[in-house]
Length: 114
Figure 1 (spheres, one colour):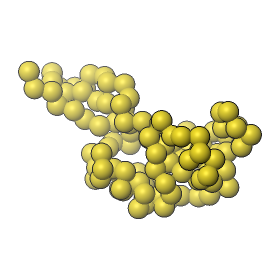
Figure 2: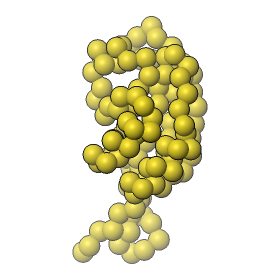
Figure 3: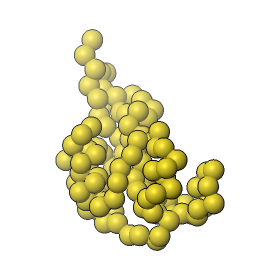
């Protein structure tokens, strides 16, 4: 996971937090990433293969831009397979701040031995 976080920081250029981000971190950063590493697990093609979802959120209150394709391609080297992105604009929960959010959906292949 350290390589993934380091890659996001280097390519994205903004701080990276887990989903348990503190309110002061949320308020003190105009743009940042949040990730969820423990997403849903679903069956893959092989009898002992599974896919675990990984979500990465880029949140910006200042209309900042990031290199989306650079980030997607770099995270492939960390074992993440890209699925899709979604874009939203709205108010950040429990604050008065409005922000644009880009959600990147990935999954990681897992092989479980019996």
